[in-house]
Every structure is written in C-alpha cells, then in structure tokens.
Amino acid sequence: MPQEPEPAAFSDFVLLLISAAPKLGLPLEAVLRSAGLPPEALCRRGVPIPLSAARYIWSSAERVSGDPVLGLHVAEKLDVGTLDILDYLSRSSASFGAALARFIRFAPLFADSGVMSLHVDGGHAHFRHVSPNGVPAVSELLVGMTVLRARTFSGEYVRPLAVRFRHHRKCTAGAYERIFDAPVEFGAPCDELVFRREHLEMPFGSADPRLCEILEESAHLRLQQLSRVAAPPPAAPSGFVDEVRHVLRECIAAGNPNVDQVAERMGVSPRTLQRQLREQGSSHRALLAETRVALMDRCLASANPSRHMLAAELGYVSARSVSRALRRR
Image 1 (cartoon, rainbow, N blue to C red):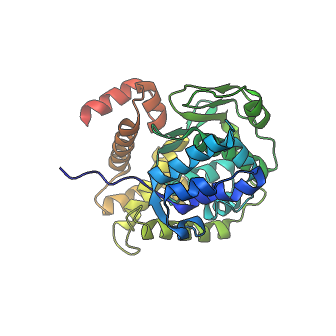
Image 2: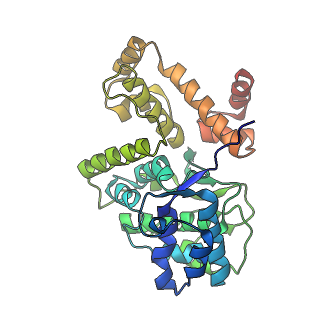
C-alpha cells in the first residue's frame, strides 16, 4: 500500500524564527545544522521543506532557548512584512474580518499543517486552529501574531474575550496576560481566539482595495504554482461556479451562507446569481451542501468535534441539522 506523502512546509516557516533570533539572543546555528536543510532554505523564501523538519527546528529552538513562551516572544519581535505577502494582504484589507479570511485562505503558502477557521456564533467571533501534532511555540506564535497584527493595522487596542491553547501551560500566566490582556485557558480542544463579533468589522486604516486585489491575485498564483490549489481556467464555464464555492466558504466562516449574503459579496443580485448558476447546471442550495460536506470531511479528519461545534463551523442552525447531514454523507 503506497505511503501518504509527508505534509510540506516552506522555508518561510523557518525564516520567521531566523529573523527574530538575533533580537532574542537565540543561538540557532546548531539547531539549523542538525535539521539538515539545504542552504537555500535558510536564506530564501518559498523553498519546500518537510513539515517534520520545520517542527523539529521550532521545538528544538524552544528547548535550546529555555523560553517556555518562545512563540509569543517571536510574535512580538517580527516586523510587518516578515510574513511577506500574508502581511501585506492583511494590512491592505478593509477590515479585521476580511484580513482573517485571507490569512486562512493563503496560510498554505507557509505550511500544509492544521486547519484554520473563522465563524460567528451570536455576538462572538471564533478564530480556530486545529493541529493535532503541532508545536506549542508555533500555536502561540500564530495566536499572538493575530492579536498583535490586528492592533497594529487597526490602530485599536484589540482585546480578545478569551484565548485558548490545545497544549498545557508551561509557565506562569504573566507573559500571556501581558500580551492578550484576556483570560487564557490550556488543554482546550484546539487553539482559539474569541472576539466580539463587531471586531470583525473593525476597519484597517491601511486598507487599499486595489493593492489588496493585486496581492490576492499574486497569492492565488503562488498557491497554483505550489500545487496547493487547482487553478480554475479563467474563461471556462466552471469559473463562475468555482467563484461561488469560494465565496460560500467565506460566508460559512462568517456564519451566514444564505443566497442574499453570497450575492452581496459577489456584487450581483440574488436573482442574477441563481440564474447564472442554473445556466451552469447548478444552484446555491446544491453548492452549499457540497461545500459543507467538504468542510465537514476536513474537520472530521483532523479532530473529533462535537455536533454543536460542527454546527457552528458549518453555518447550520442546530446540532440536529448536522446529524441529518452526517446521515446523508
């Protein structure tokens, strides 16, 4: 039986640590040598590397540094631009919610690891990261940077309602409280940030719609080149359907995938949306069901979520709806 290919990462994942090391007085030479990466992976972006090597470097750096919250300290030291296109895409987005959606979409430019999602539940927004074999320092880097970048790009003091990590705490709460200024829990089912829903609409003063459009096209092209996504033919009849699928994923993450919301995001009327889908032999209802099944399969493959969690993740009104959907799979 053929073996599954090892999940991949890119040199950018390691270059973040290399960039912060001098500011933290962190000796990485021995760690980098023992990882056995090619020299270009230590100085050039976009070089494919095994995910296991990237995780080894991060976990070894945490051990060598003796710093139990290395990920948080790295997050504080990384200048805007260190994340390359992900930073600039986020900064040029119109709002915090739009930036988070783009970050989730293009995160595979760094690593093919874990599942990130954003959904709204009542008055709360939940940003989640599920990575069963993840490194605690990387989880703390991701969660810390999300909050710190939101404050930088919005000019507002963004304070989460709750911060949760899958791993167990390895030091006192002081470092976490200083950065997040919020209750922090450990041993949770996944890494999670909880915000007030209105934070998603918080505008970014650095928003630049045209630049964001250019960067988004470039990021999508990079994903295609890295074989992370299939490239939809620009003029093919299926292009419109693929676009609706993408918008549906964004609307599910935002908590409202109904036809009016999808049409609004695409800049057309609901009637025009339905007509064009009929011409392609599809419908909003069929594509929504298809998209939910794909997202459900992905969630179930990476974790063991409850019916209530699946309902929140997939935009269902109740856990009973999820149970019915599972029976239809």
